[in-house]
Length: 93
Image 1 (tube, rainbow, N blue to C red):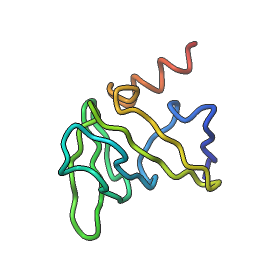
Image 2: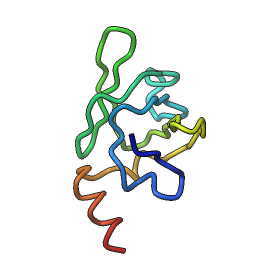
Image 3: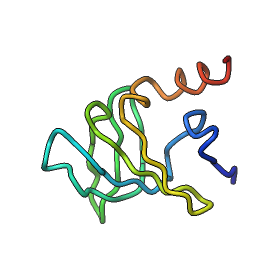
């Protein structure tokens, strides 16, 4: 397993990371916690208990728990593109 650090967080897949919703324009999303199952251009699919919830990336602030115990806050708009494009774009810079 590759250790994801805050320096290169946006270069990696989010699948498998623990996530929770810290802020949202939709109050129904506040406090959702789970594990990222899938990611699309505009959404993140999170497993919450035994169900899946599709959460928007736009207008949401997420908190991710990394493997080294670090907690990282990320605005969803920073993630709002296809995962493969986000990874490629960051690597070229």
